[in-house]
Amino acid sequence: MLGTLWQIRTFEDEVQRLAGAGEVPGFPHLSTGQEAVAVGVCSQLAREDVLFTSHRGHGHVIAKGCDIESTFAEVLGRETGLCHGRGGSMHLVDVPNGVLGATGVVAGNISLAAGAAWAAQALGSNNVSVVFFGDGATSAGAFHETLNLAVLWNLPVLFVCENNGYAEFTSREEHSSVKFVRRFAEPYEMAAATIDGNDLLAVYAAAGKAIAGLRQGNGPYLLECMTHRLAGHFVGDAQRYRSKEELAAMREKDPIERLQRHLLQNGVAQDVLEATGERARQTVLDAVQRARASPPPDPSGVLDGVYAAECLNTLNG
Amino acid sequence: MSETFIEILRRALDEELTRDPAVHLLGEDVAAGGAFGVTRGLAQKHGAQRVRNTPISEAAIAGLATGAALCGLRPVLEIMFIDFTTLSLDTLVNQAAKYRYMSGGQLAVPMVVRTQAGAAGGAAAQHSQSLEAWFVHVPGLVVVAPSSPAEAYGLLKSAIRLGDPVLFIEHKRLYTMKETIAEDAGLPTIGRARIARAGEHVTLIAYSAMVAYAHQAAERLAAEGISVEIIDLRTLTPLDMTTIAASVTRTHRAIIAHEAVRNGGFGAEIAARIGEELFDELDAPVVRVACPFAPIPFAPELERTLLPGPDSIVRAVRAQLQ
Image (cartoon, rainbow over all chains, first blue to last red; front, top):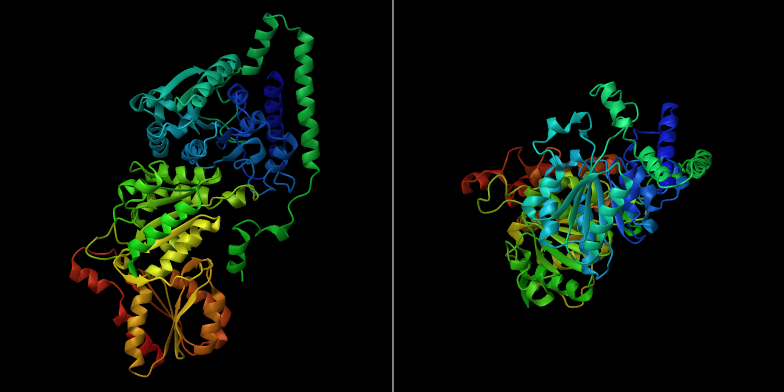
């Protein structure tokens, strides 16, 4: 899991570096500092379990098993990308690994995750559905509607809120009258917990418990992970809304360093840690180089896949 | 045996539920029969797990259907009035419509959203609108607007089997209309219009409840020696320009009739396509028959005044032929 943390960190560092160089189209959003939530939760999922994520989803899809080169190629808008350059950083889909999409509209796919859970329930499968979103999404009506439905229908869906204290540039104090997201589960009598999202082992344990409950038919679960976004809202965000002191304090809680300290204290040798990190970083850097060398999509395919073929034929006929 | 629009929708849903275990119905009150009785008895027959009531949560239930469609179900969602789809728009426009394309073809959303539109009986400004043009503007959505019970039967079944998200618009004024379905009628292809009445002098393009008005207008005009060809579009997206072009090339005149307001209505799109593609064929400017740019009023006298009907179509045809 340490290696995956490093893979995500390095992946996003590269996104930031190449975005600065003008190589990345659009406006990618980084999860730097929040990696422990992605790795802790996804380590408890089977490949067939489905995952929905937000605009800040690189970490989630890597932790779920997406190929790093294809994921980076998608962020670059290449033909070899997961979605052949049609989706980009905010719309990563990888069906073989259960990644069913990311949304650029905050809170836009929380209900879709409940729908996927409904399908699993209706088809008699034991798969669960997980959706990641930030605390900003909890001010949207669709979030509340979905919590109610998920409890009513006893759906196997895990709602993972990464509470990083900010909805874009606006602090939680300013955008919500409710301090902890866990509280929203109470009126619906949904099981919920608030945990330290920068503590990988705590996330892993809490997610394991929640997901086991889903598989036993105990109904939905809301897991609030307190964390910090070390990056801006998007690449290029000058972060004028928070002080240098606040950012410095957040860096002190970096989940990767925290896990490494824990491992050292528990007898793992320093050189083993360094080798793990180095191997993960190099894997990503190599994949990034290959992705950068891959071709852009062929413009002649720009109309492909809007509809099933039979429909499209008529539309353009 | 003749059946009403409502009975025929129920039969189509019943048969699709029987045919394909992936088909599930959901929406406000659907297990209780639905606000208009379309789904009456289906929960009893097919089970409460396949015909499910939902909370009044149009945002969440549209997402629930979309997510389920991604994962192997074929949900048929009822949004009671098209006016309420405003609350589902994020899901329909930003999620369902785009999934196939955004995922590079990995995923599809085989979902039907049944909704009911149009003005009748003093339903007033928030239960009477014709908002189809919004949905026609979104690539990835299919928009179907049947004109009669028999049409609705085939089109609903085809929509459920299609594999793309479909907005299926039922006009409330048609709900009591009766028709007999030919037993050997095959299922229509989504995206093909039909010639509802053959004629020579003018092409009248209509859909949904305006097709019945078009027939009434055509009867009256026939008595004056004017031969009207009626095209029932059936589906707005995809738009069957082939059928339109073939007809306009013969008649050299086109009139589009819809109940939605004229401004930014679907008629503008059809008129523009005819202008772009068939300009040399036209003997007269393309004309639109539509609602004036106002909300639908409550009082029956005002509602009647505003809505286009056979009279406005007859006037438009005469004016165009002068």
